[in-house]
Image (cartoon, rainbow, N blue to C red):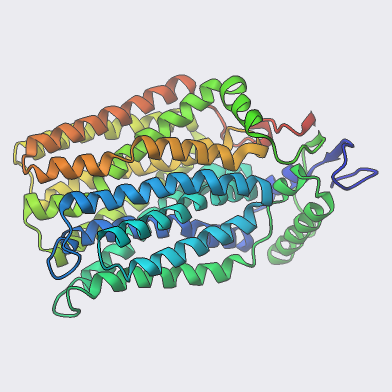
Length: 487
């Protein structure tokens, strides 16, 4: 527990075991509540991306918004730009005002913008709504990744984080099933079905907003802001819940304490010093991993429906059918491979799940260019690629959320998410132009570029990867507030 003569926000040093008490807890229903209520972020993002990909061809219909392929792809870019700005703004607020307040606010922004999207009447309105939806999702990434890593025991942080990030694919599957039904002209008018898809996504988000209210603030964040009594109370409540659930007489022994002097919110100058001076190679690593996975994902999924429709002549209402098995397979990538990130280690698994997909993408792109694939075999090839790539992409968010000090965690996540996503924000527009050309060789060159960026990030991981498996967050990256460790 925290001990001090003064449990406030003063400059006194305080010794506490709270981080290690959280790390030694056995897995419980309380942890499942954290996973479900916070992990929904990735389901919502997957839902958004899939809906856009599936309705891309529908939006070019004269009876809907009558958009061009480039405009559809541009709306995807607007979503990504919004995510970048949202990540920057909300991350700063997350480190300042806490994880809980911001993960409630960011989800609310997403809900309002998604509902507004359903009422789009032209390209400008649609793109503006996509931008605002992106700001909510971008803010979610910073607030949620911070909270998850700070609440999950260290020995399971890798596999849990990957499974949660991999739930993006559940959103993809749900979105694919929704659009398969809603885009069926025999069931809904062509200008109504796509609007209902966004409305149903908002309903899902509303349900999650109600559940999130029951989660506590991160005790680690409270410690860094000098709110020791509140942190102690929350951890004691969590311990009491788990003791009762597991019918335990005593919890596992706590090993280690930290001595700290809370500094609270750090300045942007301090953030830059930490990123560029204290941890320059970690910064390069985070940038590389986020750029690699973001370029690959943004290029493929924002234009997935366009490829199926233009090159394989798949009907609009059937595009979702090709996404469902693809999404399910990709969900199982991080789910099945996740435990190896905690056993074989981060460095080996991350580099493997980045380099192999790059190689496979080159082979698939060549077969596509040669006309050797059908819609079914194209989907099968992508499913194999992203079985591994989805685990790699999930590990990128795990990496940037655990290798920097707690005081700047949300801002570090946002910075690398924003830089990575921003650097790849033009990928949907680029691929939209390549697809619109109607030439398979042009699309192949786009795939080749994505493969090179992805594999290069795996190379950076091999050199500069951090062996963070089964280590407490405080030991992986010493908080600015901590003055001494004691085992």
